[in-house]
Length: 315
Ligand SMILES: O=C[C@H](O)COP(=O)(O)O
Image (cartoon, rainbow, N blue to C red):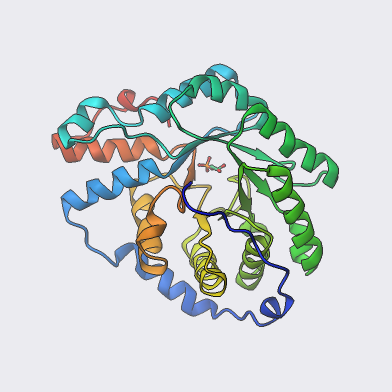
């Protein structure tokens, strides 16, 4: 990530109290986003390649093993078949990061070697976050000791649902301190937060507490990333930038499976936040099974036909 980090601010309770969301207007605007730009074919391929470099290629399963993580890392290093990239004149394409559980960080670091691809680790009792705070902080420190470059924390949803904003702020601030030089993504688990107002409030608290990115979901909630929720989070990011001058990144995650999804979310970034938010330092897509469809579409762009599924064995 280039540039300075978001240092956060004090907790601004007034701002939280003033938040009002016009839900029908948000839903209408979100519905227009996927159809907003009719992309020329060449541009579509460019947007798909950009999506690849912004993917946090993820495995967060109970049956993860170091071997599976090593295979995922091989895919992160070479996310699209070299012949397709050659045909498009593209070199050195990698995913934005790989994202794993803390016990898999060492295996990911080994497999990624000197590729420069960051390892992101979930922590703080992912996905529910229902562990004592000292254990959640210890888990962050463990992941950082293992070599994690980025930490994806989960917030305690109860603090949002009970409007305990200073407790939420203090916890996230302590997590940011425990991360040290590792960049911190704050997962809001928006599917658990009950209202778009709560999504906006939690976004602001996380940014005020120093989150480097705010992220929609763990992938384990009943409802994961949606465009309306993402729109509300992006507007909170825009507002934070206008107030403080600091740019916070955005990471939609959970349920993003198709090349169409990848393009819709990039249009959202472009329309609501601008070009700066289309690069991996400010935009990541958390996904375990998106890359396969993107590669299929790229293959179709280059060869005029869809490749067989076995060519995109992972992700
Ligand atoms: O952070 C990433 C998510 O856990 C991925 O969710 P997914 O498996 O639905 O792509």
